[in-house]
Length: 175
Image (cartoon, rainbow, N blue to C red; front, side, top):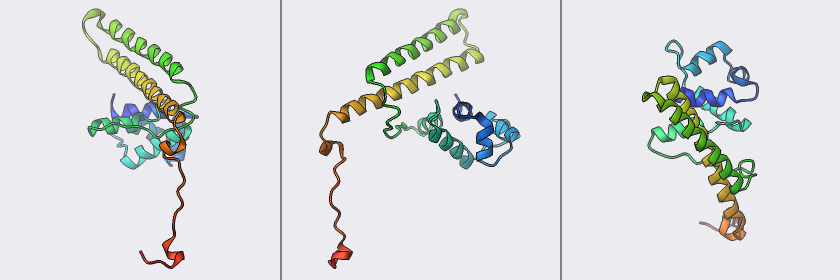
């Protein structure tokens, strides 16, 4: 998977697709298509890539975190989105079911590709797509497990306690 693939996958799943995104970022649809495809004649800038990724995250589309995860991975890090209620609506057990299904798809894609002992570019693209979907299922499982863990703790342990803030300026006390 490339940087363009990770961003294009999120854009393709956006409600209204690439056309809506191109209007929102102020570009012609054809220019946006060429930039997302990685065409040598059209360069996608970092600001535009960030704007597209942000639109996908706001819409909550599938693969909306692929771009951020790809950039983090390329920089030697790991991307973990903040907790969202929508991602944790299903229990960890339900998320495990989705993960098993996705890893089965990865296994099937690899076995099918290796039948002739060679992995073609198209087969590699299918394998990478299936792996990305399995990673998304794993991310959702992690969030669901964290949500259940946090729900079982008192508010003081979750970091949700509102402590009174002393405004030293109003009280006339110098810091």
